[in-house]
Image (cartoon, rainbow, N blue to C red; front, top):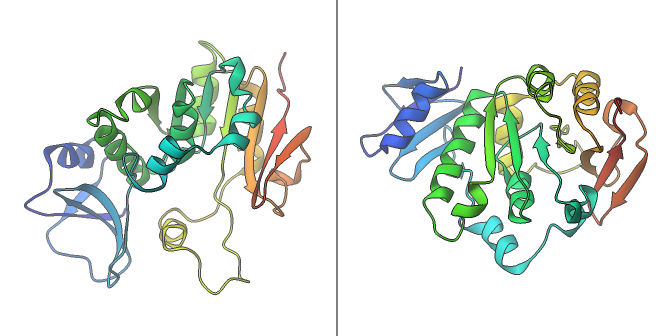
Length: 246
């Protein structure tokens, strides 16, 4: 379990998230590996000995740019946003794609099974709800904590989504000099081991209209299964699979 360094300035919201997701606070700053930092800014993912930190931030940075300047056209096409589909994001992560989908006016359920990542995402959504410019968007995102493959059939029994969206962790390329800081931290935190076959099958059983899988433009198909069709950009593509059930 990843340690959480709780500073005296930690917000009450951050403190409650530590308890909610079963995380454990430590009394001193960790000397190695990844840890969560709880301070006046909320929760951040850090690595001992390094200055950088990773947060779920929907009010500034890339999220703000995409919200105010545009972007996300390819993912919008992939989920067929003009039909106003309900979307379940089976690989929530830091919620960036969920936020883009919600900014299109869509209702999104995001699923995340890693407690540290779920806490980071919850922290980011809470801050977004408190910001007038992002509150309405964040209010369209509902976080579900737990195993996606188990939760999808349970929740689908009460009503299936139009679209299930997946962005599984992709292995770091050994051809690059160094992975981006965020991806490096995440690979170390959650690893890359996923049952791709089970995840894709669960998504196709839950979706009413399509399953959309985000991949690097030249990356392999998820579970080596070719999609029905694709939307391809400069660095990313979206593979579309048809539902298993009518």
